[in-house]
Image (tube, rainbow, N blue to C red):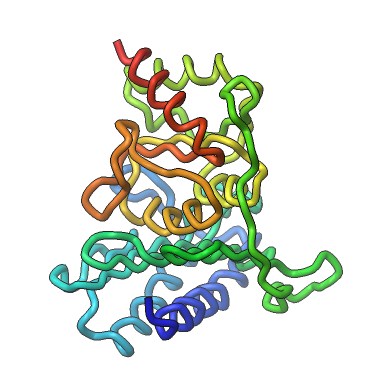
Length: 272
């Protein structure tokens, strides 16, 4: 993949962060979208900033964003963006949210960024390359002043009995899926209350073992695919298929590949 696209993706994340930071903790107006999920002015303005840059620099590329839908749906390249993934956490003043930027080539995610513009954390995944992570040092008040990137990796965890599990919200599961996730929760060592993109970022850093979600949209998950895979993990649909622009709704990620077959077997066995 061209280094030009990576440089540009960093520019997109930087631009979104400049828009979002002033709204964090500012108690701005919150609207409910058609699906009853919240949206803030920060969501809208950050996506607008990202879209404007893409339309200016790559007018032939398609764009799919949470707040603005699809633009130019026919292209080899599609930018898939979620300006604030985890808006509820953003509104509550928590850190478990981030800006997601993915680039798909022919429907396959080849580049992904999670950017947390308040903590300065940034995960960068490129297909076939190690995942990198940077953050603002604890004594650095300016989140734009991130540390040097380091290569990160998932941790070893060979059995579900030793695993820590995260999920975004039980409200997204169908009754059958809820039964499957309860069965999974009964097998793992612990469940942890964090979700959205931040949980996948923690998995890539070796701080979680399993993250499972359902009812997703492309902009919720595609940026996470190169990040998880580049850190040594595995991410796929609940039936084990690759996550793509056309196949994204129900996804599970594991840090240790040994967990993947165990997870799929358990999900299949508990679906009846």
